[in-house]
Length: 339
Ligand SMILES: [Zn+2]
Image: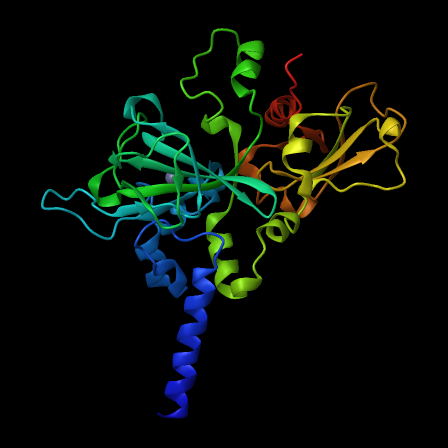
């Protein structure tokens, strides 16, 4: 056996082990993302009608950077005689099915599944959307293994139509903002319809699945989702004059405690948001109320302002940065406690 062959064999085995231990698996048969080539990107990402593969990416990837895409669109690899996608869809990690919407007309996600995972002490959710069929037995409460087949790729949505040539899985890795989303919605907008309880797309805060898959590929078994979230870049920080809200209990690993502050001295929290609105670090603070009980914008990362324009989280008025109505609403939902 030649040395090169041995080295290659070792590397193949090593990468197989790394893949087996990956926190998240790519949820379809399409592996072209891992090629990291232009052809690979074109094979992996399903574009919008623009035809640009980049529009299948997460982030400000659409409409010249003005439209947010909170997941990735993974292109089909196989189709039947009528041109319909037949790709099996797999659970990206072991977890519990939280929600199944089997009525395509009720969401722009079409038929979709939400699976909940507990990873490194964090409640993380994966979303699989535009499905054609959902496997029997995939229902709330069902535990699924990583890689278990849960559905078949489709084109379902209630927003326009998805052409056969760009059939895809819309996939999200996300955190849930507030379990009381429905109560909050009724409190703020009485009578507004919501067919999905807390499992509404507006209650999710997505991470970039492409970045996660790439970091897993790069770091192998050393990859840590917790570190990945903690290492997000701060777009802006706000002071929130609330002592307690559900996120603090749910995402304890994202709270940075200060041993010098006793619980009864806490007046509020400094919340650091990434460019897409994820409150990825929260720190209790004890301080004089800087804004008479109001939310205060503490700092803005100037260099991210242009790149993160699609979420309109921060606006500039008369040369000054301000919190947008989107961010006000996000913080309102984040800190909603039902009273
Ligand atoms: Zn999508």
